[in-house]
Length: 266
Image 1 (cartoon, rainbow, N blue to C red):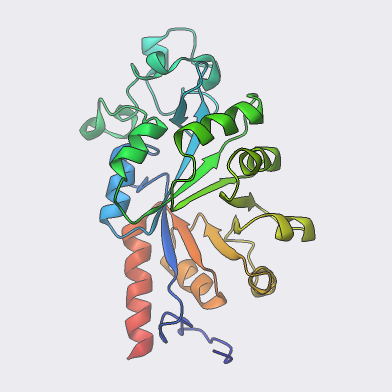
Image 2 (spheres, rainbow, N blue to C red):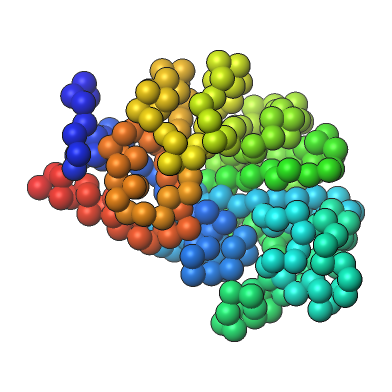
């Protein structure tokens, strides 16, 4: 396609050359507790092409899905371990984390939902087509330790992207897992060195421009916009040429792009 897309036309979705992928942000986290298996599986059921989730390393070397550095916001850590709610997740063992309820904060329907470990997620998605987008969160843990744990548990499993805002974490994974697909998450335009180093760029959707998207595409890399819950914004970004959109509302964004596809084609 050489024609510049206009408002209301999603290039490639219409002509079949490109399809905007949808990633569930911490799963279908609008309706289910974030970074839990129910949220991830709901996202898959609703048509997500990928599942984005966050990980930390525990005190005893296990990888757990969690966004924050502490367990306070999304678990009952204060009830189970009084006085420890301000401690970072890497101070807790896997056995301690397994005792926590990571669902009740979202509603009674989810009470008793545990935080999943990476082995749980890999097992749940074995044989499924979704890409797993594993975001490595900022941590005081040595990047080499985290990368070694990922190499031992995830290894070269297909359909996995390792991403982070922290370049040392991604670079440690690149060394530990040769050939791993890596992505830089950022709120600003990638540098030339970044464009040469990483396979994907997961960028703040509110700051994306066509120029940045085109520059990344010229390097043969892909662009994912985060975190987009507005149907109108999703459609605009699709018109601009993003390859994927990460959203808390997989159902809403999938429906919008499907309708846009057929409205435009008609």
